[in-house]
Amino acid sequence: MLFASCNKTSEYPNIPIADYLSLQTGQSFVYQLDSLVYTNFGTKDTIRSYQVKFLVDSLIQDNLNRPAYRVFRFIRKQATDQWTPDATCWAIATTDQFEWVENNLRFIKLRRPIENGFSWKGNAFIDTYSTNSSLRYMDNWNYTYDSVGSPYTIGNLAFEKTITIRQRDEIIGTPEDPDGYHEINQSVEKYAKGVGLIYKNFFHKEYQPNNGGYVADGSYGITLTLIQQP
Image 1 (cartoon, rainbow, N blue to C red):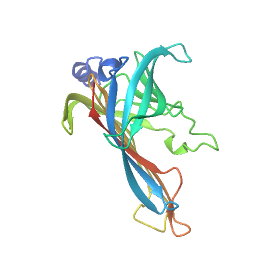
Image 2 (cartoon, rainbow, N blue to C red):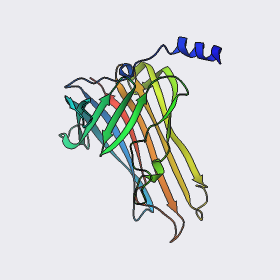
Image 3 (tube, rainbow, N blue to C red):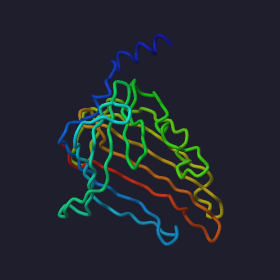
Image 4 (cartoon, one colour):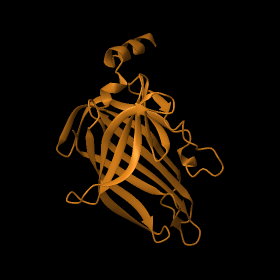
C-alpha cells in the first residue's frame, strides 16, 4: 500500500482543479453538438446537428456566497447563422472541486485528487430519488478518472495533457431482444489542461417492449466536440 501511494504521489503531484479549466471573463468556446432524438412516438431516431457557444460573462457570487462565473450559452444551426441565446449556466471552481450548473442541475464535474481511479458521486446534488423525479436513472453515478495526463486530438486540435472522466457505462436487459425491456446509460467527458471541456458523450435510452416496442420519453443522446477554443 505504501509503495502504491508513493507512485501515485510522484505521478500526479497534487494537480490543482484549475489546471484543467480556463475561466476568464470574455472567453468563449465553440462546440459541435450532435443531438440524438427519438420521434414518431419513440419508434424512430434521428441526429440533429448544431453549433453551441459558451461565453464566460462575469464573475459574481452564487447562493452560497462563493465566486461563480456566469456563462451564457448560444446556439446556431450552422456556421453562417447568427448566434441565438439559449441558456445561462454557472461555473463554480473551488480548491477541491468544479461544479457546473445547467438547466437547474448541479453536477460535480471535477474533484481532487486528480489521479487515475479516483471516483466521486458527481450527481450528488441532483434529485434522483423522489418518486416524481425524471432523472432517477442518474442515481449513484460514480465519476472516475482515467488516462490522466494523456495526449488527445480532436479534428485539428491537439492537446498535450487531458483527463477522461468516466461517469457511467450501464446496460440493463438485452438491447438485442425486441421483446424485452432494456435501458442504456452511458456518459464520458474529457478535459484538456489549460482549456476545460473538450469532449462529451452522453446517452440515455429506455426501451419498452409493449405496444409494438418504443423508446420512452426522456431518452436522448448528446455528443459535444470542441471545434474552437480561445
